[in-house]
Image 1 (tube, helix red, strand yellow):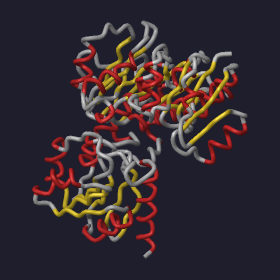
Image 2 (image 1 turned 120 degrees about the horizontal axis):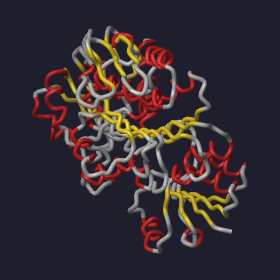
Image 3 (image 1 turned 180 degrees about the horizontal axis):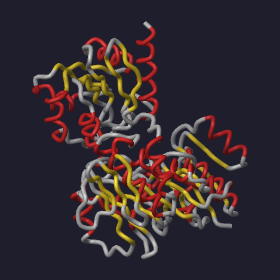
Image 4 (image 1 turned 30 degrees about the vertical axis):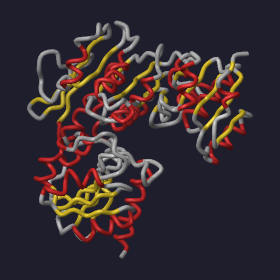
Amino acid sequence: MSKIVILGGGESGWGAAVLAQKKGFEVFLSDSGNISTKYKNLLNQYNINWEDGGHSERMILDADEVIKSPGIPNEAPIVAKLRSLGVPIISEIEFAGRYTNAKMLCITGSNGKTTTTSLIYHILKTAGYNVGLAGNIGRSLAFQVAEEHFDYYVIELSSFQLDNMYDFKADVAVLLNITPDHLDRYGNEMQNYVDAKMRILQNQTEDDAFVYWQDDPIISRELKKYGVKSHLCPFSEIKKNGTIGYLEDGQFEIEYPVQINMEQESLALQGKHNLYNSLAAGISANLVGVKGNIICQCLHDFKGVEHRLEKVATVDDVLYINDSKATNVDACYYALESVKTPVVLILGGKDKGNDYNEIKDLVREKCRAIVFLGADNSKLHNFFDDMGITISDTHSMPDCVAECHRLAKPGDTVLLSPCCASFDLFNNMAERGRMFKDLVHQLEKR
């Protein structure tokens, strides 16, 4: 019996363990941290051997194959030892893909992944497709493959997941954009991160489709290096040579494979970045045969994604917006661009090698004040303190929200769009966003 070791006891880890056990492998799951009670109970329910609080090398290094959680860096000591021994290391998505013939719609990009993935899933679900949601959102793909049966999966893929995918193939691959992100995980080399994103194309054939933003300079440059076999489906803000999705005279247009058009003003998601997300989603749904009227209906009634430009409340005539998913500079740029009133901007967290020059002009133009929220705000101070904008330094969400409430004036917007990961003060970006929302709602009740 072959032995599979799972590194990481979160959603992807326990799902991979269940699928591996069901396929007859000897399974052992190990987590250097503490596995949550939820996942411990699930692992016990399926009688899967596990450990947490450290790695037992004797139990791990004799694996025939290892499935690694995307959150574990390749430089982790146990991963380095496995690699030195030549043990294959793959992702949960790679493993799950071996055991399903479902059509895979896979979405990646530095920004907009979650919104676009959620929108595609909403369209296919509304159209009556037998579809699952997986990857960075939704439930473990491996668990769904083990215990359920879907004909389609809509999968949000991070660069970390793509790193350990080799034979997996996307039937529809969506690449929204490539801007600097996670450079701390890629040796501070942008090209390493770019190469990871471009893996979304691997193994595609002429029967598959590649949906991408035509105006992204990095994607355009990188495509020249690849012998792309799949059908190219570019989108842009305006119609140009080869573009199949665009905006023209206030109309949202998709030309292929079936003509679709609707009023731009009727799109649920507004702003330039959301136009791109809507085009990518509409094209993808069109490619798998969803009727045009259903696509238009869903682009009109979609409710948006939690923690992505989410309007929380208006308190004392100040609008509070939760954009906790903005964990890189480009995402913050789009958020600032979308706000039309003076802004009190919340920045900070675990820096990922950020270059804040991209938002410097927008900050100077739009921000009344900046409130830093992080364990160590020194890099932010070094960059923003000389801009002549009011700066406040905080190290907890209650202090941050209180300071924003003090600084904001009627008609302003308080925008949580941190540019950084959340792991210095919070377990994840969702906890950061929900704590922000809870404190804002407390302000409402005063």
